[in-house]
Every structure is written in structure tokens, then in C-alpha cells.
Image (tube, rainbow, N blue to C red; front, top):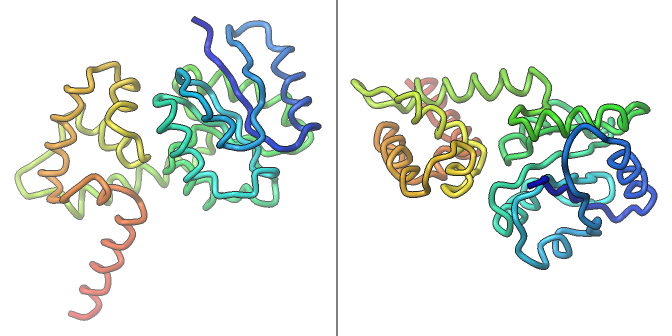
Length: 224
């Protein structure tokens, strides 16, 4: 079945530009849902997973919690954020990547050329983000393991995959979709990861909690 794509934007001119760009795509099967002006309208009715195109310029809200609301309504959805060049700095992209956003297109002159490429990449399972974002993500995942992993333990390949998805706020249901395994099967690596890292719950794997843990450890080292 063709995937569904839905824009969330309160700017009619932008919506028309997106619709025109999508209409010109011929080599990728998808269906276009009517654009929503806000997240409440987008999640009015539960729907299958889709690719959300988020107009950060018109939404005037933090895209992270917005993504969480959309995913709670349609688990397994993907997200492509369209950012103003003035606000699309690296630190913001890193933060939003941790929230589960899969790609970024800055609204420069050639954004309509880049948008189809980004859509293809994301729907093929590859994030459309700067290499620097992936490097920071990998570095922080490695640091988390070095700081928290209990002596004599290591993560299996599957647990490593699950850890990366947990760090991006994905739920068990979304992890099962991403890895094509049952929801029940997901519970075992999640429990093993928490035990091996000596973390009480999955919130301890999120970047904001990890940053607090890292800061406390640095303070302890300085005090000694």
C-alpha cells in the first residue's frame, strides 16, 4: 500500500508549494492527505503511520512535543522538518533528531528540489540529516555505554539497535515496527538494556537525563 504524506502548516502559500512539489514526484508511490493547520487537526482521527512534513516556520511551537503527540496517535510515523535557515542550526537539529525527527530541509532557494530526495531517503529507512548530527548521536551513545555499562556486561547487536531507538524517544510499539519484530519481543532487550546500564526506567536513556548524569559525574570528578 502506498504511504501517506501529510503536511502540518498554517501557511496556505507554503501548503500549495508543497502540494505542487509532491505532485511532480512520479517514481515513488504515495498518497497525499489534506494538510492540517495544526497538530490537533492532524490527529483528530487515529490513522495509520504516515510521513509528516512539519512547517516549523508557521507552527511557532517546539517540534519535539508535537512529534510525540503525532506518534502517540499514529505509531510508526516518520517526520521531516522544514526549517528556516536562520533557525536550522546544528544544535537544534541534534535536539530534534533525539525527539525522533528523521530529516531536515532548510527553506532556501532549492528546498523544492531537495524535498523529494529527503522523502525518498526517509521512506527507505535512511535519515536525511547532516553527518555531524549522526556523529554526535553515535558519540553520545558510546559515552552512555562507557559511563553506565555494568562491569562484565555488553550489549548484543539487537540491544544496540534498540538502545539507539530508545534514545530517540521511540516507544516499544514503534521499535517493533522499525526492527520488524513483535511488541512482546521488544520488551526483553529493553529490560536487558536497563539492567546492564543500571538505569531504573527508559527516561534515563533520553539525552536530557544523560546530560544531567554526565554533568554530575564531571562535578564529582572536579570535587575530588
